[in-house]
Structures are given as C-alpha cells and as structure tokens.
Length: 225
Image 1 (cartoon, rainbow, N blue to C red):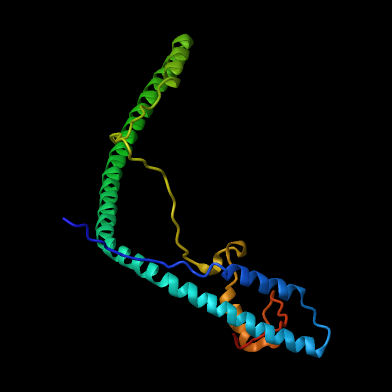
Image 2 (tube, rainbow, N blue to C red):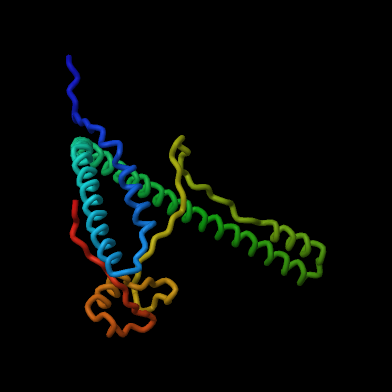
C-alpha cells in the first residue's frame, strides 16, 4: 500500500547573490557622506532604492515560506483533535488524583489530631499523678512521673498515598488580585501601550507624571527598483 503524504512541500533555492547584494548596499550607505544638498538628494534616492530592495527580498521570503507555513498549519490541524482529547484526559486524571489525595490528607489530619489529643491526655494524667505524689511528699516518684510525661510524644500519622513510578507531586501556589489599589507600587508595571497612545495623540503636550516625552524624526520613503 502506497504511503499517503499529509503534506508535500518544496522550496526552490533563492538567488544566492541576495546576501552579497544587500551587504554591498549596506557598505555603500555606510560610506556615504552628506555634506551638501546634492548629497542629501542622492541619499534620499538611495533610501528609496534600499527600501525597494528590502521589499523585494521580503516578498520573496514570504512567498517562499508560504507553502511551508501552510504545510505546518495542515500538520497542526491534523494532530489538534487528538492532542486536545489527550490534554483533557490528562487534566481529568490529575483532578481525580487530586481529589483522592485531598481525601487521604483529611483522613491523615483527623487521625493526627486524634493521636495528638491522646498524647496530650496521657501527659496530663502523668503530670496529675506527679502533682499528687509531690503533694504526698514522694518527690522521687513525682520526678519520675514528670520525666515520663516529658517523653510522651504524638504518633506521626503518614499519608496513605501509594508511590507510583513516574508520578511526581510538589506544592505550588497560585494567587488572585482582590484589590488592585492595594498592590504595592513595585509589583505594578506601567501600561506602555496606553502611554504610547496618549503620546501619539497629544505629542509635546503630553502631561504624565514620571514620563518624559522627546521628539524624534521619522522618515518615510517610497520604494524604487
């Protein structure tokens, strides 16, 4: 049975002189000096030529890459349903493991509380007997009973969770912001996009505390071959 291809893509080799031509253009621009109006005009003309060269190369790159991207999208689309099903299965299993762990932890906590209470009662009984012995003048017995009371410790109740090869657990923490105004300044980041919109709208008249607005020239040029 013949193998059916999900994607068939070929990418022809681009012009190998592309990099050299761009490198030569850069070298020419780096060597250019503007000392007169004629030089300025030549630089503006060269800017249009450089931009045209950039656009031509960029378009070639986009056209060459397009079938590769489309192939990638087809591969992603093919595997997406299976990956989605398995991701949901993973999440469900982790949730069920978590429910069981929480139940076992509650059982352990209840048993630990019972063990702690029993140990406290045992210490209290020994201390009461020690007080009674001391009151009766038997200091030696009182001292022995107090020592016994000091050695009574709570039983440590382990969590009844089986150890499974490949399964790991760790304590992680999450958070939610319940009062944004109360969050300290060092945990806040300025909204650069909002500031940019305001600066673009008001220019030199922008008045935002802590922000300095400076002018800059932005050149535009039509492309030329």
